[in-house]
Length: 368
Image (tube, rainbow, N blue to C red; front, side, top):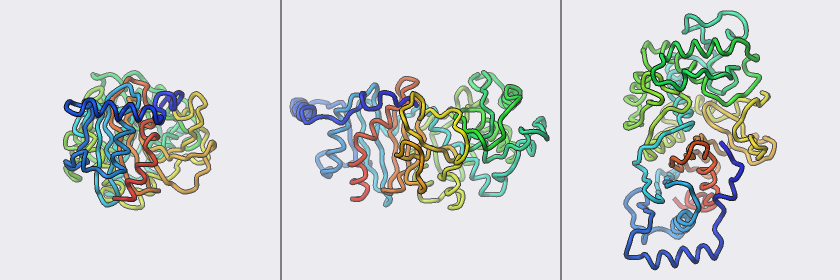
């Protein structure tokens, strides 16, 4: 995620810009405005609350590199959505790293059922995994919080015709020497590929697709979602989904209301799991921007301090490289997503959009 020009591409509009927006809306009152709002339930824009109108006004004038949809849900499950351009809450988007949270939840549902345990080792399920040395001390929790020491990513992770299990073996081969698990955080894809194979073996299924289909059947979530990048046979579990915004928010809602995994596992998912570990690579720290967030299981633990010092989790998120930004706000009791698919490397854009309406969204959550 590159935050280097976070505030230059999406600054809060000036009064002059808002005036220009109102003039443009007046001029185009009989034509399409390039944006749409349905309040999440068919509410016409003229019937929106003052807070919702403020959100719409800001979103419509923001400079952005692609169309997007904001979809939010309050603690009481009231929804509001607004789309700019041709985006919509039912549009299917490529996930990039937003799939990390979904992957973590699928695996934690197996932990809930006793099929896996957070202290399980890869060699418990993978025949070729070492039974001695640092590799043998990797636990499932280390794979989910990215402190396993597996920092190298072989090319096969991104090859459609590669075999999933063979690729996990390539991950092992390409990480012949690793740091002691739990001591070094590295944001990458290798960890979740290994965790995924453990989950498949523990569940007695031959593909991740079958495992995900079981999760979908059990929960009713992501009926249109799928892991298909680079292929369904060799999905990249840390970034290979397609999903719809409304279905992703259904998923966030189920997590927020503790409906799909146990409260104790939710607490594990959203707590700081890397306290004390050295930060080898964190995309929110690159370019010295100062977003010193920590990590749970598949989610960033947000903290506004220059140096992470937050003792209570108030907000978690799982941004993707194309700019989508799903989040759970525990401080203001609402969830949401900025759904978009911009250029690769525009991961800061969704967060930047959120920042411009953050106060209004918190007000909306308190009103609904």
